[in-house]
Image (tube, rainbow, N blue to C red):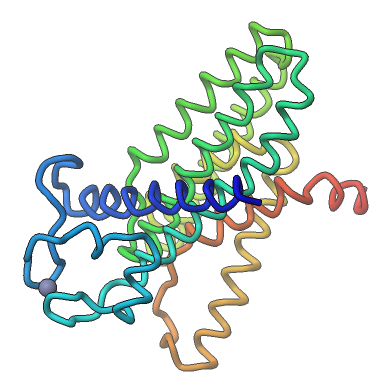
Length: 262
Ligand SMILES: [Zn+2]
């Protein structure tokens, strides 16, 4: 139990750092320079202003210095990365027990990294309405390198890689033509590159399921947002969080769903 609490705290702290990275990427600032300052009055923050989740709850979502509301992005990303780390140590420990292969340590590391990248992509789109393509390309490069290492270790095959690359290109072209057909309304260029990453991760035929799931989830939330008056008709929702959720659900249950249908 203690190890889960520690992993959650570690993940939430990583999430806290990633919040700053996402914000500075979106604002095109340097990732590392300067100490953390208040979003509103730019006063320098103390460590107790930056305790993940806790500070947000303690000051009720406001800054301690000037009492202005802070973005809900802070606790959400901290919570998500914390949850990812807990899941990872639970499942990662399982992988390590199976370790009869040197690649068994690489596998959980890859998924942790990809999980973090996907959370950053979803958060950028959800809170700023844009997908930094450098995050997506980082995910694509990591996935390709990981798969190539698996191939050299005999745990993956060239044919599988070829299939997932072809699927990725197909998914990219699908979103590209969708954007051209809708004249850029609804879909952005970021969605295309994200489709490329999802296609690469899921391969054929799971990509179909993942993207379909993303559309269904997006449609359901879109209708709910219209009904509750949170959005007006014609306003677009950020799509990346739904794509990432579709990917996650497919990773967890895709095998079962395809088996059931097939
Ligand atoms: Zn302030």
